[in-house]
Amino acid sequence: MAVPVAYARSSARVARICEAAADARTLRLQLVEEIRQVVGFYAYAWLLTDPGTSVGSAPLADVPCLPELPRLIRLKYVTDVNRWTAMTGSPAASLHDATEGDPTRSLLWRELLCRYDIQDVASLVHRDRFGCWGFLDLWRSQQLPPFTEVEIDYLADIAAPVTTALRRCQANTFAATSAGDAGRIGPVVLLLSPDLQVLRQTPEAQEYLRALVPPTEGQAPIPASAYNVAAQLLAVEQGIDDNPPSARVHVSGGRWVNLRAARIGDAASAGDREIAVTIEETSPAERADVFASAFGFSTRERELLGHLMTGTDTRQVAGLMFLSEHTVQDHLKSIFAKTATHNRPALLARALGT
Image 1 (cartoon, one colour):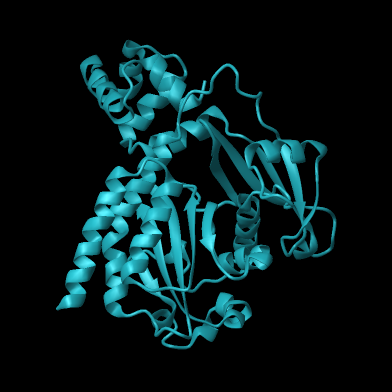
Image 2: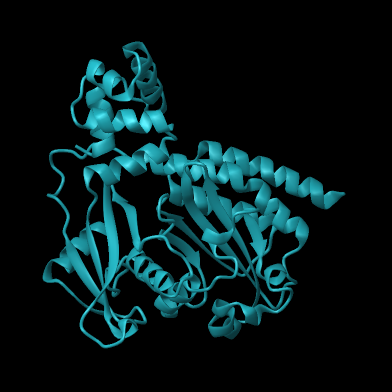
């Protein structure tokens, strides 16, 4: 009886952490320590994702194979066992259960994790009706038993409040950029080899990347998001997942960038061609789409935001949406309440970053 009580108390603490956190990094750091109190693990990787494409970014990780980061990311994306995009039932699952105790059925385990004495992985996906907001992997070494059913149930139980908190933290990143901010970002290009090693970059890339993603001293300023979109391209090519190889990523202040991956070159085999990852500031439409998802807009509210972005007035919007002006105003009030704005200029400044 003591174990269920411990998990219930931890779930309550998770809920309080989720209610108080203002940014995704602080939230994840606090939750990792809380989860560790009831679910032991050796290492972890926790990524945010683009809510539309489910492609990862902004990793928070403590893993023993950081020198092999591109390989780890590539294998994570092209492994179909417990892939976060395929976990449409329970939000939590273990590698041990998914493979019926035979982890060699997982490409990621077979080609990498086995060398680090990992015997089980608990995976948790953060998805709600507005999109996919992240995924968490907890690694357990041979010194610990496989994850139990009770532990997986606990992770599934905390999925909903954590997902809502991650979405709210992403919503908090939207702000109008100030007049003193740097000019428009990019596009800059990174060239990666088929196995995701950085080959070269456009001259502007180094300067942009150092400003956007300050690197650890002595390391190249290569955002992990670049590896993630490139790995998603490999997943699409191998038929593992059909989401586009792109991700909209918050970088600093109120700024968001879009990363996309594509093959280039003229090698006979597509798999031998280099991968170009482009990084540029999100377009107004792309930014507004994430904005609407992060704030939990309804379909009608998304449509209304689109009309407001074109400068359409209430009477015109009512005609375009086949609604009364009064109903349009009700939708607008709902949007203001969700976004903590009080007028159209303030709303559009947050949504578009202007």
